[in-house]
Amino acid sequence: MKIALASDHAGFELKELVKKHLAEKGIEVLDLGTDSKESVDYPVYGHKCGEAVADGICDRGIVCCGTGIGISMAANKVKGARCALCTDVNMAVMTRKHNDANMLAMGARTTDSVTALEMVDAWLETEFEGGRHQRRVDILNEM
Ligand code: RB5
Image (cartoon, rainbow, N blue to C red; front, side):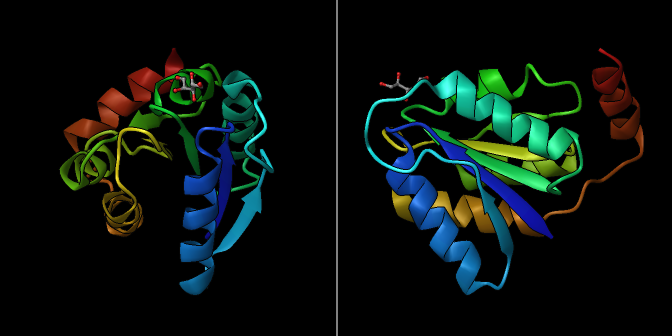
């Protein structure tokens, strides 16, 4: 599995932490920036990550900004991206089971780093349940 990562300046440190965590697990990543804490615009990075997933360059994407809100909005502008902003492990699990979320958004200013990495692990390990949820995901994908 190959994971695209992106953040704005506020999410930069969390993105770096996630990158290190994934590397330790032997998971390949594509880092789409940003590369420092210098101020940048989150829509650019969210959209870029959404495209990497929707185009099949990466299997999944993880995006971080201050709250995770703006960057998830940007990712979800890309057709084929299903980006879920999660704040706890249960949300990360449920969005895989029910929404087949192919992108995870997290807020560096709203979520502590231990919880963030627990969410990443849970989100990566949880399978989509399919069944009645597939029909709903199909509707989303048609929009
Ligand atoms: C940047 O200050 C902040 O607005 C951004 O990281 C994010 O929280 C937006 O949703």
